[in-house]
Image (cartoon, rainbow, N blue to C red; front, side, top):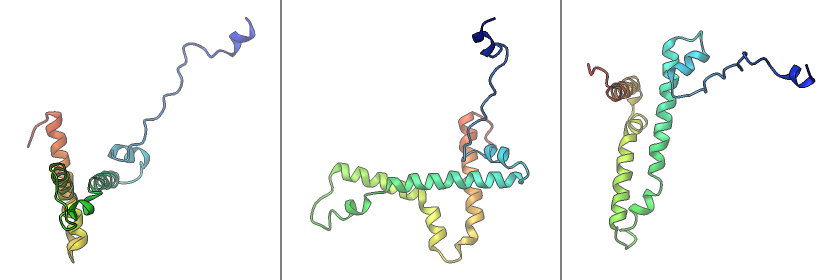
Length: 136
């Protein structure tokens, strides 16, 4: 046996498996990290992360709306491309309106639990339809 044979690890031992990457949008990721926390807490944190990321994405689509909206006031006309961009921005803004209602209306913070339930139910419904499961 030479010195290189002693430094080689045995062929039958596999390297330890790397733990799965943490995904802040998955409830199971939080439950795996916080074993003593209640199950609903992991679900709450995951849904909070999902909605925060979704809101950021939608608000990012609205960037540049003010100069585009001010074109007619400044004396120029909207082109067909401008109109398409405005439609796209309005659709993105309509996806964010539930959050804006919570912040804008007095007393609407009381609606927050209902909003969370409604958004989560819609997400679960979409996932169920995408996986081909029962639509009860």
